[in-house]
Length: 299
Image (tube, helix red, strand yellow):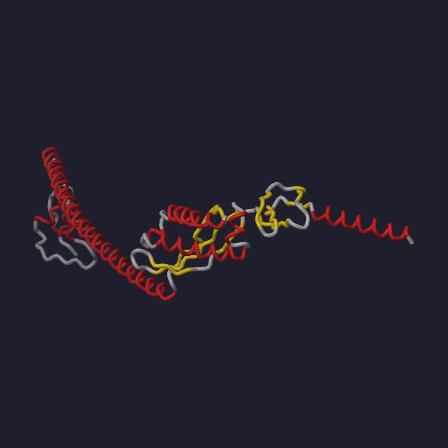
């Protein structure tokens, strides 16, 4: 009986030692950090991964993420400085930098995301309200995102968060404005096309007028050169005729008469009404130019 009681007591002691030993250690993973609380009061933050010790029963551990987290903020409609409305979709990357402040202000990630959404929304509105719509859609966008990140980071440190980056995924006009702007852009493009066509027609008219002018000048030049060449040709021809006449007058007269026959007797229906004794028929006789009545008379 006594031995049985001792065994039970020993088992109880071992159980208590096991419970106390199990409650006095905790493990921190590489992706997390731990906040040790004593009766609900924060004591220390453990960021080193591995096995750690705590006071059993009176201390407990709250685990938090130590990795960089993503947050996709809801779309918000803002008004730029030029009174243009814009729907902005942003996202942020953050980490829990101060576990103690995080626990004291928001306690968990759900509340942290709600607070972060409000901070990002207000920061985006505050920064973009100072610039025009064109700046958001141009190369100045990088500088604006940097300003938004700094503004969000200055507020998020109050709840123990460190903002790694803030990006504008999309910046669109509201649907009702998009159609009106599209119609205005379409009208502007039609106007630009009309102006371009008008300028093209004007240039074409100038080119055609210049081409016509050049054509007249070229034709006049060509006619002038042709007249000069024709005159020079006629002069050369006359010179040759004169030289031929001087060297053999009889042959020259014969040649000119042949040319006259050729030009005047073209075709099969040529009719000449001339006297047989005419000088025109001089070479219809013998080669010496003597007129033969029988042969001189045309049939």
